[in-house]
Every structure is written in C-alpha cells, then in structure tokens.
Length: 257
Ligand code: FES
Image (tube, rainbow, N blue to C red; front, top):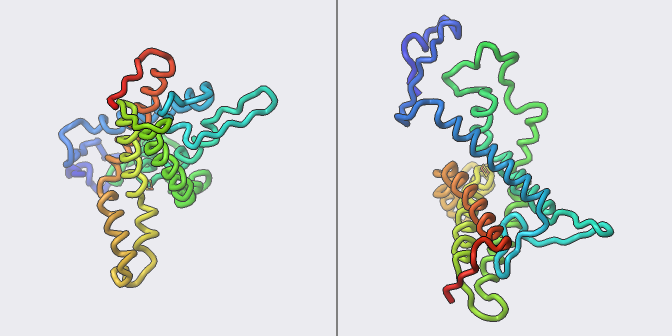
C-alpha cells in the first residue's frame, strides 16, 4: 500500500486525506471490500435458506455438501433439518479462518481498514484486536479437526456416486461434486493452523523429515489460501444449486455412463 506524503504525515489522522493507492491492483480501493461484503452476505443468506428451510439435499447418487454426512433425526413428527448437524462445522471453519477474518473485519466493520489507513473519524472506539466475543476465533484449530472429518465424508460421497447401485455412473453432478471436493481440500489443507501443526513449535523443523514434507505440502496450498477460500465457496453453492434443480425437476438428470 503506497501512501502519499500528506497521508504519511506524522501530524496524525486529521491530516489524512485518503490518498492511498493500492500497488497490487489498478481497481479502485472500494472494489475488494464491496465484493467481500456482497459475496459473504449472499452466501450467508443462501446457507440459512438451505439449512433451515430445506429438509434434504440428495438426488439419486448426488448429495449436496450441505448434507454430508446424512443424518436424519425426528422429534415426534418433526424432522430436525438434516443440514443442522453438518453446517456448524464449515461455518465455524470459515468464520474463524485467518483469511476470512481479515476480509470481513476490513470489509464489514472497516475496523481496521488496513495497516496504513486510519479508521473512519465518526467511528467510536478503536480496534482492540480479537478480544471479547472475537476471542472465539481462537477456536479455529478445533474447527479444523471437525472439518477434516467432514472432508472424509465428502470424498466418500464422491466415490460412492461413481458406483451407484452397483454400476458405474458419471454425469454432470459427478463432475461438480469432484471439483467441489478438490477445491474444498485445497482450501482445508492449506489452512494456516494446519501449517503450524505441521511445522510449528520446533527449533529445527526440517530435522523431522515427515513433518517437513507435510509443512512444504501445506505451504504450496497456503500460498494461495485466499483463492482457495473463494473458489471453494462458489463450488459449494454451485454443487448445491445443481442438485436442488435436479430435485425440483427443473433440470434433467443426464448421465454419460
Ligand atoms: S486459516 Fe483459513 S482455513 Fe485455516
């Protein structure tokens, strides 16, 4: 982030005239936070609709990622929304993700806007780090454990749909489920907490060859963690929408084998 002489003046925020240029993009500075706010809000609304207002996500061999693993429990005649048993794990994982934390703090709260930019003048209080309620973000590593279990179910779902009812099956849904689980794996296994688990807390982290190899593997994914985060968010929605359109009869179920 480059700042003009006036912006960098030691005279303080009152002399700041928002002359801040982003050296990484030619786009106006408001584009990225606006994109984050719109995309995350839309995803939150869609997820709430899927989780609370729908009772299933299976069409033949295909299973929506919102419903994996499938758990069906009733209280009398009332079916507890099956996605409720699943959705908390990815929600906790994404909500406490180091990348998303930066993105939503800056985009929704402008708090802090970024290292070089003071907060809006009319904003009471100041950024106090992740204390109080936001200390819950420290639970990220436990969300990682939970999501790792769910990843195993998602990979199982993909394998199972290729062998539907004892014969080989492949269709557009197969492709979407496979792309989705690959993208989710790229996001999950590039996690900063996993990278720390693999290579952190050691004086010589290259001395343990297994951990060093794991650390290097995680690092390959970690370098583009933000991209994996966004791409996997979209593939989750796309896969669910496709399966939902099949369930509604809007799209035909075409198979290629
Ligand atoms: S830091 Fe993003 S998933 Fe762990």
